Image (cartoon, rainbow, N blue to C red; front, side, top):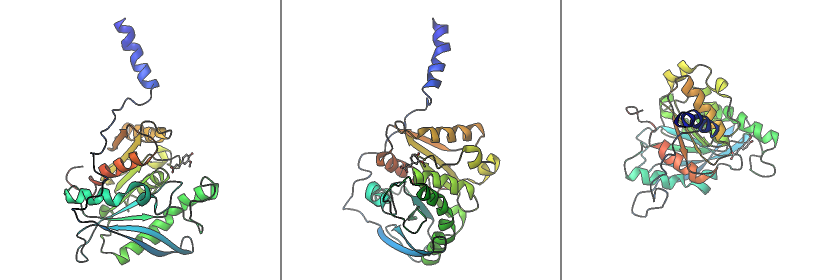
Length: 280
Ligand code: FER
């Protein structure tokens, strides 16, 4: 009987897919506004996009205690298929999460840029957000980000311009974008995170064709997803490939769905690893 169990149990585990443990949620209060602390500033910026051919908007978060005399690293934080440059602010209160982390000295001061990842003239999340030309515009955004958004930010804000001080992360479609653009441009980004990454994520062999190179360049590769998310196979297959090819990465699975509970927790945890060079 014992023998049977030991033979059959691994089979069921593999049927169940992932046997990975569920990671802890963020602590209580991490996303609750505190009136007793300093707050960062939120602004909208407008840049001209050569890629799209018109002005486009992004949201920017400037950390508490910001000084023009200093230079900051930058996190580019991307939204999902139904969102726009305001999605994180509306659903994820990243400014609250960051303000609370700063007061506890848990993150490095950084500027956070939340652009609109739909690089097309009408970049609103209206009509059929799954329409092919809209999905395509999420891929086109790679050019807009690299050639238009980043140069604008680097020209207008006191930021560090090397890859070691540039991070990219996002939720769902934005998670796919972050993995595709980050891992596809290791000369530009070495801190990369995909939260509940969507099917726009490139297949693993395309995403990381040269595991040795990725291993040598990356400071942080982060994947996270809810265990009840219908898209979890994307994160699982990415993590499996990375494991098989010896590319260090964090993979956290939370008890959750395809929603902001998971994305807020992901941001809370991911952001604490950013721009820390000693403890990766
Ligand atoms: C899909 C299912 C979901 C897909 C994209 C998504 C590109 C994106 C979801 C999101 O951004 O929340 O099949 O195909």
